[in-house]
Amino acid sequence: MLRGSLIGTAWMTGLSVRPYLISRAVDDGLRTGDTRALALWVAAIVVAGMGLSYLGTMRHRTMTFIREDAKARSAAVVLRQLSRVGAVLPRRAATGEVATVGGTDIDRAAHALTLTGPGVGAVVAYLVIAVVLWSISPLLALCVVVGVPSVGLVVAPLLRRLEQAESVYRQQQGELTARSGDIVAGLRVLAGVGGRGLFARRYAARSRDLLVEGYRVGAANSWIDAATVAVPGLFLAAVVWLSARMAVTGDISVGELVAVYGYVATLVVPVWFLLEGGHQLIRGRVAARRIVALLAVTPDDVGGPRTTPARLGAATVPGTRQPPGPAAPGAAPLGPAAPGAAPFNSASPVAAPLGPADLHDPSSGLTVRAGRLTVVAAAEPADAVALADRLGRYTVSDATWGGVPLADVGLDEVRARVLVADHDAYLFAGTLREVLRGARADVDHRRVDAALHAASAEDVVDALPDGLDTPLDTRARSLSGGQRQRVRLARALLAEPEVLILVEPTSAVDAHTEARIAERLRRARAGRTTVVLTTSPLLLGRADVVAHLAAGRVVATGAHAELLDRDPGYRRLVARGDADAEQALR
Image (tube, rainbow, N blue to C red; front, side):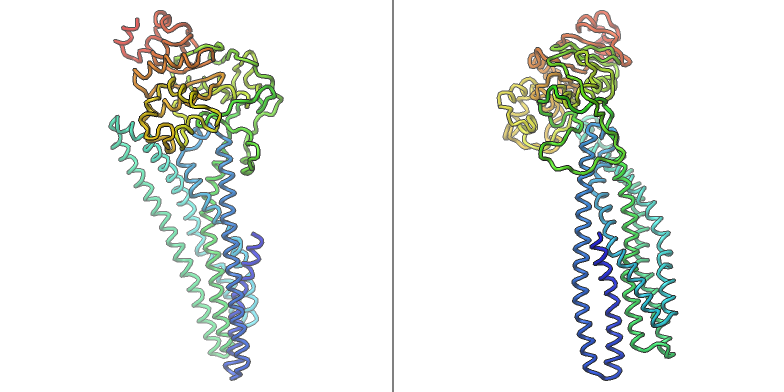
């Protein structure tokens, strides 16, 4: 930026050299008939033009470097922030907001930095031209000194109006982008329930509202663009008219008249840069506020230390809940942490249980026995998600693991041994084989086949043209909802964590498939701790222990059949409000 300011200053100031050279050529060469003097001044004009071309090229190259470097740095900081907040991001920022920050706001903020070089040069050139004009005519210099700030005063209200309109527009644009993403993601479901037309009409209405705001932004932009051209032109005309009258009265020479015109015409360039820079600054400020708002999002404080010396091992599973961990060996840092970010507790960790151990959640009263299949039937889905967060240490809680406070165990150790798999966990682009095994190249085909069998997903592979080597797009949108859910389940099973917590793993599959999954899941996880949060009777019937969760507390535990006999609330929950089904379960 310093180099750009120096080059920009040299270029802007150099623009005022040519009018002086032209005035000397007129007065010393043309008016006196001195051919030799005229040739020397013409040669000087040519050399000055070549020098200005070089300086202009270097100024533009430097400003382009500043812009691209700023975009790369900003993108790196934002990317690091998105990785740092992890699973918290969907609860704090809409998808459309993140998309517009990464796609538009970073570019506009970076463009604002390019005004530094020509901006500093414009101010210096303005002062130099004012001094030069003072040597010709104090009256003309006074016109310039007063006129240029007046141009800024004319445009300033338009810039404020633009900032207000741009802020509203960018906010609504982010919301509409998020809505469009939601519609596309749930298009099949909307078509199935007949809601496609309703959501299309709602989107069209919001789009029309955004169009109105877009017209407001466009109106402000058009006035600013018009003023940027017209006001300096009017200013130039006024000064030239005044200097021409002074030339007629003999106050200044013809050569000085040409020089004045050249100086003022040159001054149009700095004035234009200042006005355009103000325009870019307004748009950059609006964009920067949105970037800073995203950087201000902090991950949930899950308490406890980050690492533990006890054990580090299993690879993480792409797409499952994974908050940020330490950088991979050899990875280059992407940038500083977000300002105001809450650091993780760096207290010394305690040793995790050396082997399988019970998990206990005092908030709900649930105890998950090691090596058993525990199914939790929650009356409220939010209570089930909150329970998974506490057992997986995605929030601060009093949960214990083998009698040790879970919050005191190193976070990396918890992530390596306890896996929380949501039913809508993210699926990255890649072949199906890559989606299933992630970065773990040591997973052989037998383990992949076993995981697919347990998730009843062999038909998904059979239906793809290249089987496991078939490329899938982001979120695997080419698959149906049930197929995606079974792929997620197979991926979680393939990770083989010591503790697996599944949230509604069969909500999108049919009853026959669900029955197969229930039977195979029990066999695949035999002897390992598994928690399933669901109200599916088929999964509840295969559980070693069923826990009924109501109002956030465990109100009954036992086998599925036992709870059906002695717990009316559990019976109503499993029957899902169907009186006939509830009577049949009695």
